[in-house]
Image (cartoon, rainbow, N blue to C red; front, side):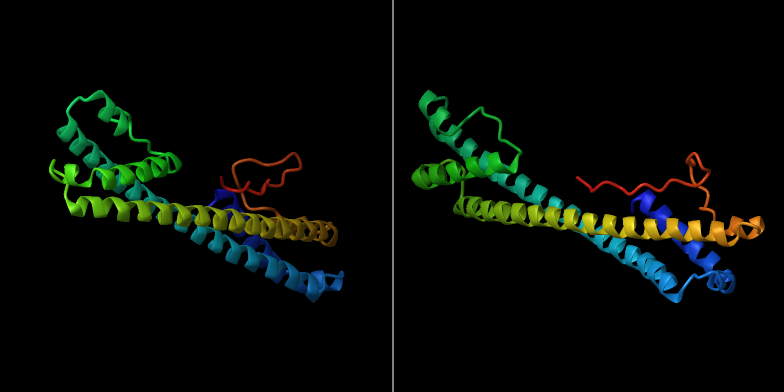
Length: 226
């Protein structure tokens, strides 16, 4: 959870408690039920949107792990094909170039997908020769299936990242709305309890690392996660 959002939710709870403890006096000065409900709803909405954003973050983590597993699986099978080619053709320059012997297997999904498509074609073309040099039909089948897994896991991870970006933007909007209403409420309290500093203390922001120039705690809205 974002520390800034966590702080904001705790501060909102404290402010709601201060309002509840002084509701009659505030109502007498024009603090309507609608204003109270709007702030309470905004606080609750922020909690819900933060929870949704955290679920989205968790989903990205899960999908990234699945993608990494797919990359490892594909890389292993591609290397097996290369090893079988080295067994079959030795150091033949043409065949070494054809099977990209000595080239580093990329770890980026885009490049690995292109390489795997190429290796699949070679595995089909040199099928019998590769099977005679350590590769099995199961390995070749695994090359195709692992490629499919790589493609699907990449799509799932990219979609999860988009969902996280959306959830973060929605959460930040909820944060901004609650922050604005909290500011207005504290401003109302400053007017309402101008002659009661002991009560006004209840409406101050809860302690945090640093304060702004006017002594109130700064709670900037977090930027969307990358």
